[in-house]
Image 1: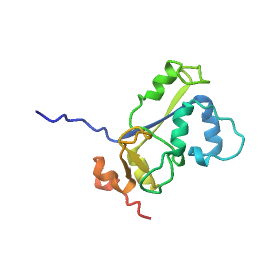
Image 2 (image 1 turned 90 degrees about the vertical axis):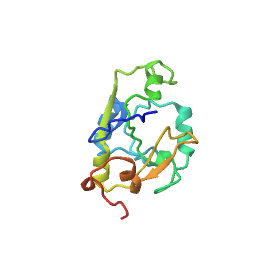
Image 3 (image 1 turned 180 degrees about the vertical axis):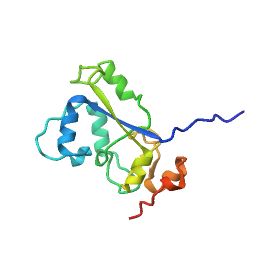
Length: 156
């Protein structure tokens, strides 16, 4: 049997979606913040997430890197289609009935994150699934086809 060959784009995009109404708040804060590290500034933020899943993410430990739980990190995704997007489109998120029209994507790349020197973790699947494997920033070059000039040591 022949192996499936998948073309990897360069740069490798990563995505985060949010409600358009939250863009001004993020710009005023000057950053995206992990749920556990959101400033207590009373700026408005429209929640679009499934409460049950968020409760799992609050408690799901990250077994590598800086450790903590999923909510200690700003989540980005390698694909722009997600089960969450389907739930929003089909009205299966309690308290949310606006569909996909007011949702926007923030797009960056693996290469930009690597060059930033930030410490991060990444996974091969849904964050709350028990079979999901987590890796640290030090392993990114082994997983993604990055040029040597794109790889930066994050040991500092």
